[in-house]
Length: 153
Image 1 (cartoon, helix red, strand yellow):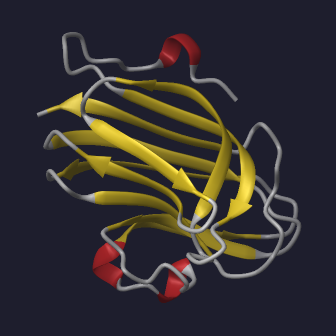
Image 2 (image 1 turned 90 degrees about the vertical axis):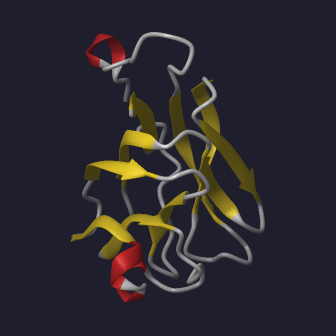
C-alpha cells in the first residue's frame, strides 16, 4: 500500500513522514506491540521511530503539533487492535488498555484487512504505538502499514 501523491506533506524544515510496512510479528516482551520489517520513509525532525525485537515499535514525538496516524493490518483470526499514546500496558490487549491511552481501534473478522486513522494533537515526549491483542498470528504481508505525518502546530 502506498499513499503516493495523495500525501499531505507540510512544507518547510519540519516536514516529517514515517511510513512502515510488512508486518514482523510483535515484541517478545511487549507482546501487544506490533513490529514492521520495512522502513519505506522516515524523514524530518518531528518524530523518532524505534523498534526492537523485545519492545516492538514506538514513535516518540519531538515537536508538539497535529499529526495523522494510521494503521492497516490483517490477522487470520478475529482480533482487536488500535493505536495508543503513552500506554504502559504493553502486554495487554488494546481493548483492555486504559481508555485515555486509546486513540482509535476496532475489531475484525478473520482474514479481513482493517484500517484505523486519526488526527490528533501530540505533545513533546508522547509515545505512539500500534497496539494489538495478545496472541494470534499477525500478517507479514507488505500491505500491513503504519503511517504517521506531522501536519504542523
